[in-house]
Length: 311
Image (tube, rainbow, N blue to C red; front, side, top):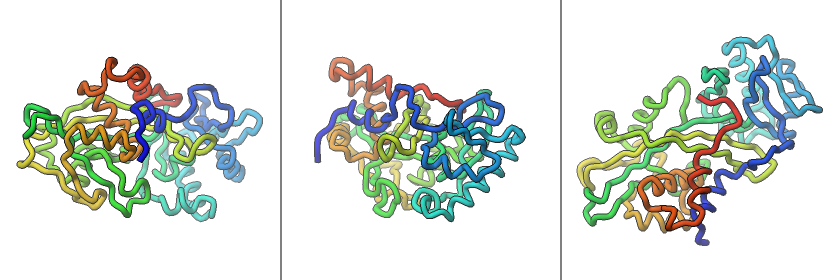
């Protein structure tokens, strides 16, 4: 497998241009207060038959109808569109097969919920999605060999996305109606069998990473993502162990940090999880200004300013 660099890992996931890109249509709020997402011209054409989405081909905007002035009305509209589009062959992979029956919240400039949409549909309209990613680790002073170690799961071979790749210890999307902390507790149990009492006493908030990803390359759908990061410190290598509770992972391996570094640079991690691991290595001093000439770009691009309203 081809060896890469830390900056390559970051550029792969924060892949959307930093320049103005006139290729995309802008999804606009009903009152004109904000742009909510970027939509490709191909997908934008499917809105032509939606009377409550006002398409302006010259300005390249898709504006939600002014009369949709409550979240309930907007929820009903986007639920209807998503359900209708499931039956369109063009969306069979992205929407129909990817349907999750899980709602993601889009926010307005006042940081309050603006609309809730099906998770699979969010990718098509380029809105910000949120999640939590948790690094399970054993610090050097608690490790059997004096080296930092990380609990690293391998994604199930049956996962629809990135099957068999390495992942963060725990990760999950921020689905309605769960808050950030509720999602931490829920995902730690569902994905790694870790109880609430253990998580409450061992996890700590470690910041946020953000990036805009083009999963299929330039001029395709864009995925602006914000991930709340937590570090989960284990006391030792034997008392509490993560295990695949819900089948999302095949297994968990306790890796010495040197092995994590090797596998990261061998592109064995799911792309956004590679960014999260890189952020962890920066914060714990394994990537430094002295060790990497691209340190400033690495750190900066792990924390991208979003062009849309956020939570």
